[in-house]
Length: 132
Image (cartoon, rainbow, N blue to C red; front, side, top):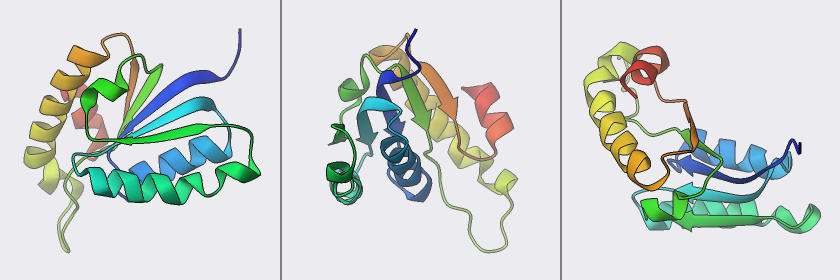
């Protein structure tokens, strides 16, 4: 059995999501990375920056998207979406907003990629994993 997956989706092109996608490319852990963000231009900008390193590596594809359907057939999907903590807030202070985001994200992932392994990286991670 190969240790490399063929397609990994990353939901959220913020700091964490972009770094996860970049690590996947640098470690060459898959053939395709789909970097999803509701704002396509954000996903495109991050993907283009990461794509600049690909010529130094083996052939890989990084696809920016704002369509959940592009995550279909992903072996693994890493969910990094959520509101940013404001100064003075704890991770639990973001729970209400992030719970709503996780619920809607999981509803879409259940629809387009029901067989994918989903990793939650959003905070507070333990509670949001339970919600997911």
